[in-house]
Amino acid sequence: MSSTAYLTIPSGRYRLAGMRTRLCARLIDTVVVGIPIGIVAAVVTASTDSSSEFPADTDSGFGAGTVLLVVAVGLLAGLAYEVGLTATQGATFGKKVLGIRVVRIDTAAAPGEGIGAAAALIRWATLVLPSVLCGVWGVVCAVSPYFDHVARQGWHDKVAETFVLATS
Figure 1 (cartoon, rainbow, N blue to C red):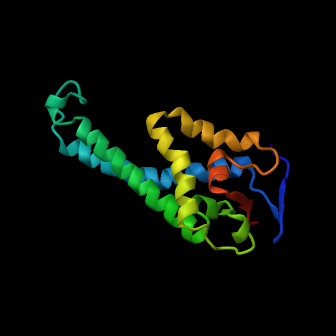
Figure 2: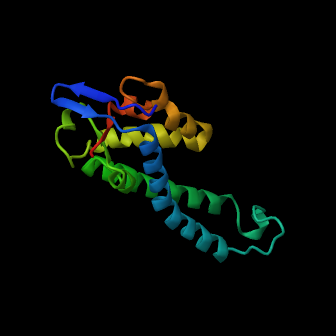
Figure 3: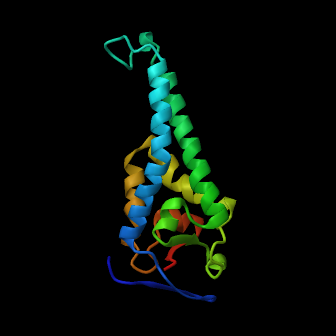
């Protein structure tokens, strides 16, 4: 899906973000959030008794509680990063670097304006929360814009009523 596509709405005609650009922005954002979470996970893991032959053994001190803590911190960090920036600015660091932004129909004409907390939270929750239960969902949801040849909306975009536009 390398052809240029446009979204025409009452406020104007806008170029939709390309799929490779969206994927690369997601990868950048994953690194931005993932590196600090990886550091936290390493510190937490190193601070527990890892003398057992089996690190996941509950007798070693590195049990399910530690894993759940790291996952919870990761989810909260992702929530704060993705929802906070998309709600207030319409773009995360990765999206800004690659010249794309998330908009609602009523915010498309206002560069730099966010999509609001509710839409950002719905968008994030649709993409991320089911992935916690079934890791395949995140991949399916991430590639879902490939199946929408009109507006390139992923399922998370459709649920939140958002679009991803190119800014450059």
